[in-house]
Length: 219
Image 1 (cartoon, rainbow, N blue to C red):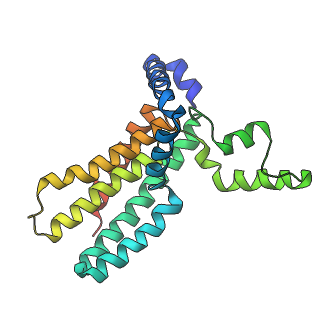
Image 2 (cartoon, rainbow, N blue to C red; image 1 turned 90 degrees about the vertical axis):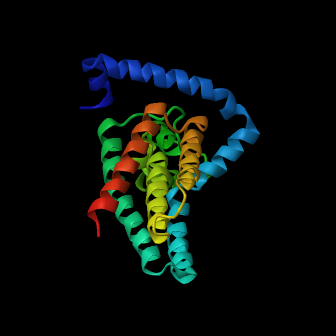
């Protein structure tokens, strides 16, 4: 059942869609503001796959070498397991619902219009299009947000790991710092017109569930 069929069958889905559109329109002035858009792009980049995976291994090196030892590796292991869980769920939902982003990204444009302005040589255009579609086809869809999922997953697992390492002495106020980071990253996806509000909310929920499942059921 795709998004169009859901809208026809359930009125509440249509209402959520209208609310999402209203929120996206309110974000357009921020999207048009270059300093804000640049800042949000940098914030958003921190949870992009190409950046986050190298950071995971850097985190592993710093925590293990920094004296966390086994606990540092356990945090890293939980992150990897939770990452696999959330990627499986989110990729499946993206293909299932195929919701178009508020402002379609390059992959969507190439897919829909069969165009590529990156290649000036005509015979290379088809190869360029196929390459972009191969690398980013699943990620052209909006629902749910992987950035929101990843940021909330990381905030919970990292906080839990350091809390255990400090034998519960870590003040609960520190949970607000990673949560604030997760909220900021999620907000950046709205400002950049990459996701609707419901994409971000469901993405955050998936990230939190992935983290709790991993922490409680993965040794």
